Image (tube, rainbow, N blue to C red; front, side, top):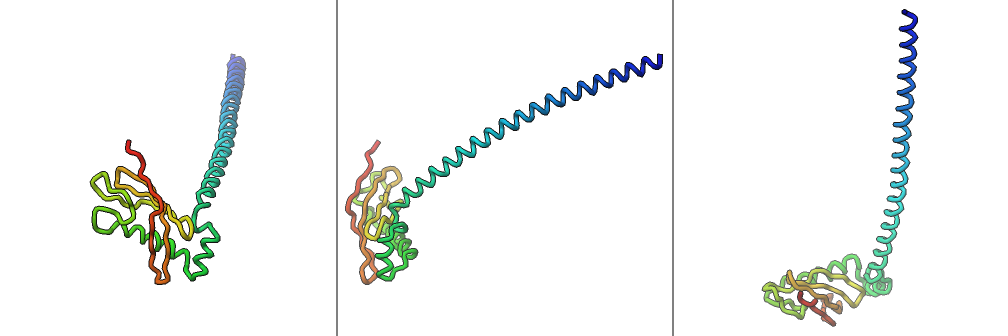
Length: 171
Protein backbone atom coordinates (compact mmCIF):
# COMPACT_ATOMS: atom_id res chain seq x y z
CA UNK A 1 0.00 0.00 0.00
CA UNK A 2 2.87 2.28 0.82
CA UNK A 3 4.41 1.66 -2.61
CA UNK A 4 1.15 2.62 -4.34
CA UNK A 5 0.86 5.88 -2.41
CA UNK A 6 4.43 6.82 -3.41
CA UNK A 7 3.69 5.83 -7.01
CA UNK A 8 0.51 7.97 -7.05
CA UNK A 9 2.39 10.85 -5.45
CA UNK A 10 5.16 10.48 -8.04
CA UNK A 11 2.66 10.43 -10.94
CA UNK A 12 0.75 13.36 -9.42
CA UNK A 13 4.00 15.33 -9.00
CA UNK A 14 5.06 14.50 -12.56
CA UNK A 15 1.70 15.67 -13.89
CA UNK A 16 1.91 18.84 -11.79
CA UNK A 17 5.41 19.58 -13.11
CA UNK A 18 4.26 18.89 -16.68
CA UNK A 19 1.23 21.19 -16.21
CA UNK A 20 3.46 23.96 -14.78
CA UNK A 21 5.90 23.58 -17.68
CA UNK A 22 3.17 23.79 -20.35
CA UNK A 23 1.45 26.70 -18.62
CA UNK A 24 4.73 28.60 -18.18
CA UNK A 25 5.65 27.94 -21.81
CA UNK A 26 2.30 29.32 -22.98
CA UNK A 27 2.68 32.45 -20.79
CA UNK A 28 6.25 33.00 -22.01
CA UNK A 29 5.17 32.67 -25.66
CA UNK A 30 2.37 35.13 -25.00
CA UNK A 31 4.80 37.67 -23.50
CA UNK A 32 7.20 37.22 -26.40
CA UNK A 33 4.33 37.91 -28.82
CA UNK A 34 3.45 41.06 -26.91
CA UNK A 35 7.08 42.17 -26.86
CA UNK A 36 7.45 41.50 -30.60
CA UNK A 37 4.27 43.47 -31.21
CA UNK A 38 5.54 46.38 -29.11
CA UNK A 39 8.87 46.34 -30.93
CA UNK A 40 7.04 46.56 -34.25
CA UNK A 41 4.96 49.45 -32.88
CA UNK A 42 8.11 51.17 -31.61
CA UNK A 43 9.70 50.90 -35.03
CA UNK A 44 6.58 52.41 -36.62
CA UNK A 45 6.60 55.20 -34.04
CA UNK A 46 10.29 55.86 -34.62
CA UNK A 47 9.69 56.13 -38.36
CA UNK A 48 6.68 58.39 -37.82
CA UNK A 49 8.65 60.68 -35.49
CA UNK A 50 11.61 60.73 -37.87
CA UNK A 51 9.25 61.83 -40.65
CA UNK A 52 7.78 64.50 -38.37
CA UNK A 53 11.24 65.80 -37.47
CA UNK A 54 12.18 65.89 -41.14
CA UNK A 55 9.01 67.83 -41.94
CA UNK A 56 9.70 70.31 -39.15
CA UNK A 57 13.25 70.83 -40.38
CA UNK A 58 11.86 71.60 -43.84
CA UNK A 59 9.43 74.10 -42.33
CA UNK A 60 12.22 75.78 -40.38
CA UNK A 61 14.31 76.01 -43.54
CA UNK A 62 11.39 77.54 -45.45
CA UNK A 63 10.65 80.04 -42.68
CA UNK A 64 14.27 81.06 -42.36
CA UNK A 65 14.51 81.97 -46.05
CA UNK A 66 12.91 85.35 -45.40
CA UNK A 67 14.99 86.39 -42.44
CA UNK A 68 17.70 88.98 -42.25
CA UNK A 69 19.90 86.55 -40.32
CA UNK A 70 19.91 84.12 -43.26
CA UNK A 71 20.28 86.63 -46.08
CA UNK A 72 23.96 87.10 -46.82
CA UNK A 73 23.44 90.30 -48.84
CA UNK A 74 21.53 91.98 -46.00
CA UNK A 75 24.14 90.93 -43.46
CA UNK A 76 26.91 92.27 -45.69
CA UNK A 77 25.01 95.56 -46.10
CA UNK A 78 24.98 96.11 -42.33
CA UNK A 79 28.51 94.86 -41.73
CA UNK A 80 29.89 97.13 -44.47
CA UNK A 81 28.41 100.08 -42.60
CA UNK A 82 29.96 98.95 -39.31
CA UNK A 83 26.83 97.65 -37.55
CA UNK A 84 26.69 94.49 -35.49
CA UNK A 85 23.64 92.63 -36.77
CA UNK A 86 23.05 90.70 -33.56
CA UNK A 87 22.61 94.06 -31.78
CA UNK A 88 20.95 95.98 -34.60
CA UNK A 89 17.99 93.65 -35.20
CA UNK A 90 16.84 93.73 -31.54
CA UNK A 91 17.28 97.52 -31.63
CA UNK A 92 15.02 97.81 -34.69
CA UNK A 93 12.38 95.58 -33.07
CA UNK A 94 12.55 97.53 -29.81
CA UNK A 95 12.07 100.80 -31.67
CA UNK A 96 8.94 99.44 -33.35
CA UNK A 97 7.58 98.06 -30.08
CA UNK A 98 8.25 101.42 -28.37
CA UNK A 99 5.85 103.02 -30.84
CA UNK A 100 3.11 101.02 -29.07
CA UNK A 101 3.75 103.16 -25.99
CA UNK A 102 3.18 106.50 -27.74
CA UNK A 103 0.38 108.44 -26.05
CA UNK A 104 -2.84 108.92 -27.94
CA UNK A 105 -5.55 106.78 -29.41
CA UNK A 106 -3.84 106.03 -32.72
CA UNK A 107 -0.62 104.20 -33.39
CA UNK A 108 1.94 106.25 -35.35
CA UNK A 109 2.42 103.50 -37.97
CA UNK A 110 -0.78 101.44 -38.00
CA UNK A 111 -3.09 103.11 -40.52
CA UNK A 112 -6.30 101.70 -39.00
CA UNK A 113 -8.12 102.94 -35.91
CA UNK A 114 -8.92 100.48 -33.15
CA UNK A 115 -12.45 99.13 -33.52
CA UNK A 116 -12.51 97.50 -30.12
CA UNK A 117 -12.23 100.61 -27.97
CA UNK A 118 -8.50 100.12 -27.35
CA UNK A 119 -5.51 100.96 -29.46
CA UNK A 120 -4.01 99.12 -32.40
CA UNK A 121 -0.59 97.84 -31.41
CA UNK A 122 2.16 96.01 -33.23
CA UNK A 123 2.15 92.43 -32.08
CA UNK A 124 4.87 90.56 -33.98
CA UNK A 125 7.75 91.70 -36.14
CA UNK A 126 9.98 89.95 -38.64
CA UNK A 127 12.90 91.79 -40.19
CA UNK A 128 13.07 90.41 -43.72
CA UNK A 129 16.21 92.11 -44.97
CA UNK A 130 18.09 95.41 -44.79
CA UNK A 131 15.09 97.40 -46.04
CA UNK A 132 11.82 95.60 -45.23
CA UNK A 133 9.92 94.52 -42.16
CA UNK A 134 6.67 92.61 -41.96
CA UNK A 135 4.57 93.17 -38.85
CA UNK A 136 1.15 92.27 -37.61
CA UNK A 137 -1.00 94.45 -35.41
CA UNK A 138 -4.09 93.99 -33.30
CA UNK A 139 -6.46 95.73 -30.92
CA UNK A 140 -7.26 92.49 -29.15
CA UNK A 141 -10.14 91.52 -31.42
CA UNK A 142 -9.28 92.69 -34.93
CA UNK A 143 -5.91 92.27 -36.57
CA UNK A 144 -3.99 93.00 -39.73
CA UNK A 145 -0.56 93.03 -41.27
CA UNK A 146 1.71 95.59 -42.85
CA UNK A 147 4.94 95.87 -44.76
CA UNK A 148 7.25 98.57 -43.46
CA UNK A 149 10.40 99.96 -45.01
CA UNK A 150 13.05 101.24 -42.67
CA UNK A 151 16.20 103.23 -43.00
CA UNK A 152 19.01 103.83 -40.58
CA UNK A 153 20.34 107.35 -41.05
CA UNK A 154 23.94 108.37 -40.52
CA UNK A 155 22.92 109.81 -37.14
CA UNK A 156 21.76 106.27 -36.27
CA UNK A 157 18.11 107.30 -36.29
CA UNK A 158 15.54 104.85 -37.56
CA UNK A 159 12.82 106.00 -39.91
CA UNK A 160 9.85 103.82 -40.74
CA UNK A 161 7.39 104.05 -43.60
CA UNK A 162 4.35 101.84 -44.08
CA UNK A 163 4.31 100.61 -47.67
CA UNK A 164 1.22 98.40 -47.60
CA UNK A 165 -1.23 97.27 -44.96
CA UNK A 166 -4.54 95.50 -44.60
CA UNK A 167 -7.04 94.63 -41.93
CA UNK A 168 -8.51 91.14 -41.92
CA UNK A 169 -12.26 91.07 -42.60
CA UNK A 170 -14.60 91.07 -39.64
CA UNK A 171 -16.47 87.91 -38.82
